Length: 69
Image 1 (cartoon, helix red, strand yellow):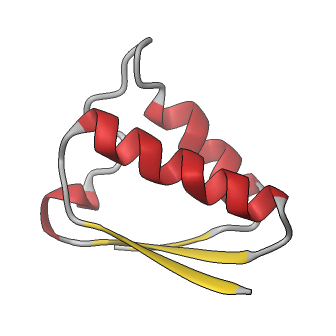
Image 2 (cartoon, rainbow, N blue to C red; image 1 turned 30 degrees about the vertical axis):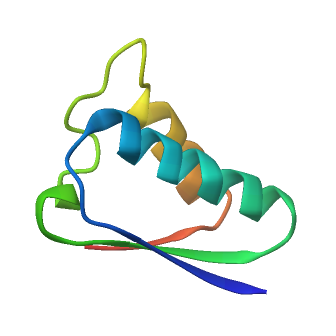
């Protein structure tokens, strides 16, 4: 299945959960595209031990997820 996730929040927890969800879909064999809109364009802003955005984003891209922003 082709899945498009549209992310338009700059809240670290929301960004982290969106990318984690994308990773779950990729693991299930889906094709996932993440579209970053407005304040979400800086995806890794707010990276912290509680919300490791860089790690999740790296996994997303290495798992052949597509990011547009």
